Image (cartoon, rainbow, N blue to C red):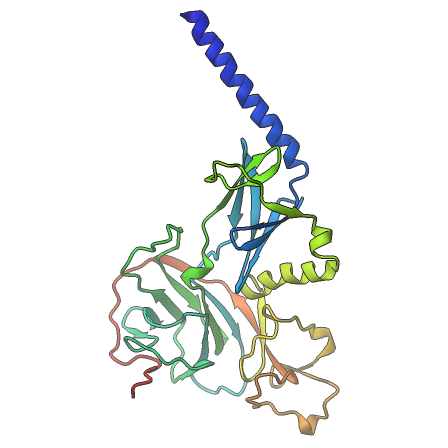
Length: 321
């Protein structure tokens, strides 16, 4: 009986080590571009990855446990990112531009605890861009929370917190809302001797793979795509024109070295445009001649609590009216 148990244990260990050897051997050549699950997975040697699908860009780090590859997305570390600047043209109060795909019902903003307003009216269905509001008063801190009455059905760990950002000497702000769709679960692949496969597919059919050089013969293209994620979701600052087009976002990147700083107005201007022709109030979405630089500011967070909401929302978005 003891001999039988030892034999089974030995067989199990041999199977484990064989699997481990396969995983380690394949891990050495695991980098590449895989077409899987309707997306392109770029696995880099430096333990980072990029997922590209229609309208989706995900970045993160990967690790190996036994015979599985785990891709851990870089999810937002807060539901709200706030960027700020000093605007000399604002003499009292403050201005806030609210950004983010899917921004709408459930967001509350204001001075905690008794001067909080719903951002939009209930059942808002007609959103403008940009959503910019000038507040008559400037509190010492801007408090933001997203009321969530239902549990997130995707199983992703999304923080349910109330955030507070000090206004200090700033009076012009961008609030970027990180919607639930930006949070992703881990991706898991099985490592086999033939490559990566779906762990739920018993056939073990490997995903189609190409080298990074084959998929991206122009190295600058991949660098730009990788940087696009940081510019959109992890930027230290944002550059926007008067129409709040975020030029430093995923579509392109602008270097401030080619601009001249206007200290009086605290903006960056195109030096090739004559001063008399500069339109500081242009509503042109594509105008790059005058740019405002908003720096990201740090805030604090705490568990959500019940707040007293003022009856009137900041914005009324109703196409039926």
